[in-house]
Length: 298
Image (cartoon, rainbow, N blue to C red):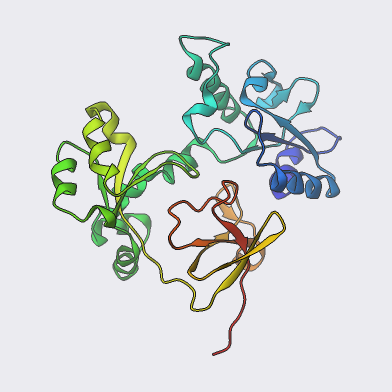
């Protein structure tokens, strides 16, 4: 809402702010998307859904670097629910030789305009596993470059997991380790991008040098499960899980580098839970569930 109003205020347009959600083709993970759109419409914002392929031939540049969507007009906010995986840019029917470049150029075209974008290319790169791996390899002194005191950097360093770049020595390294303590990850987002156990050395032997930078080795995190059984519900059926573990994500909202959430706090949270024996935790994939926080007075 803040982003839409901020961009719209910079124009002379009198119509309602417009929100564009970029989605995958044949998207079936839509429920939270529709809830978001409904909330935005109740706040007076027009919402639209398009795939990268649809946007390829329907975006133009208006006055004052305005992003124009055919049949709609000036766009104020672009929210990407696609574009986090290489396959999102595949469009062989548009250009068989440069199928991915075509839609990647559409993504770049969006960010060349005066429009609020989440997430930007820079944001994606900053949170990529490649950057995570480089950060974990830095010393506390090197981490102070991010406006941390040495004391703060040492605390952060103690929280970072052990990650290693994949290179020619990775196979020799993993052969001397307990492979169950490691996971091999590629740069993909979401579930299905991790390799475990004895499959790790096999995959490492299959990689070519030009593929090394798209993978990383990470020491597995083994959080303690809940002390009491918990009920999880899927498709209206309750099931008991004895070893439930949860991950908590806190969200803040920033616009032009400034936090806009009230009192500098967080905008909301998300809890995702799964059985400790499950290696993938995706809710959409059916292996994890949405959860909530509860206060327990001991």
